Amino acid sequence: MSQVRQVVEALMKHGPKYTTISRETGVPVTTVRYILREKLPKLGFTIRPAINYGRLGLQRYLVMLESTLSPHYLINLLDLFGDTMYLSYYAYLLNDNKFLTIFSIPPKFEYSLTNLLDELAEFNVIQRYDFKKLLYRRIIPLRVDCFDFNNGVWMQNWDEMQIGENVPEIYEEPSPINELTLLDLKILFELYMNPFASYTDVASKLNITRQTVKRHYQKVLPMIYLYNVFWMPRDYPELVCTPILIRTYLDGEVRKIMLNIPFTHVEMRTENSEYYTILFVPSLGFYKVLKYIGEKRIFKQVHFLSMEYAANFTFPLNLYNDKKGWINIFEVGLQKILKEVKLTE
Image (cartoon, rainbow, N blue to C red; front, side):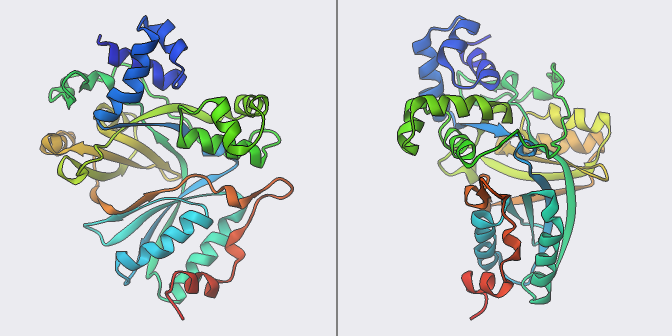
């Protein structure tokens, strides 16, 4: 097993702790640092902690939006929702002319969100929407056995390399940690944006003591279920990668087949057992993936995701108050929202 593969496997489990990774793998600390800080970024990998939003007290909802407005205009509204209204992710489905969105909200705000969507439909901002509760939305660990870290390419015989370790199906039940504070969220946010940040770095950024950072870090650490190693070349990604969404219905065999594809990045399950996966497929492997899932006869729909009209958002720090908890921002008047994004005068 290559040193890089060993380091990446240890990283996903422990995070960017150089000494811990070195002790587990036998790779020198200086080499571990080089692999994580220099080699992986050059190969197109980004490292981010994957957070269980249920531990924040948030419930995820999958919402498909259809609109007569062009995606260029509608993303003004979606960006506002991402910055101020609990929207976690959106992507335009090129072959369906609709947006896939994921909202992460306190469960008690569900009616307020659907009411806002109803009002947007009345104003013809959206034509219709499909609203589904997600049991989970989870990042899949990188299949390190299917990537050649020496040459920086995916292996083309991946379908002959069945996944060895079972990835558990874990629901994201909204159950916030005890006495969650805004400072907890701020520290978690800093570690999300820069997983390599030290206690001292975060303390300096937030103007607090190192000891305070350490204490709160230990509190939020259980929220992180995986250190995500995500492949997406930064230079001209559209030339080397095709993002797709596959919708099917879940059973044990379907999930096993989808998780065996090394390009599967996210899996989602709804209350009625609809199963969605998002894949970032290298261009050279695109035909093979379609052939593989076609022969298995498991998928109901394949959607192509836009790279231009897509965005991820972190949890909204501005919507948490130590006294009240999460704030119901959906009660803000619709006219103010529409004016903000210049959809009305």
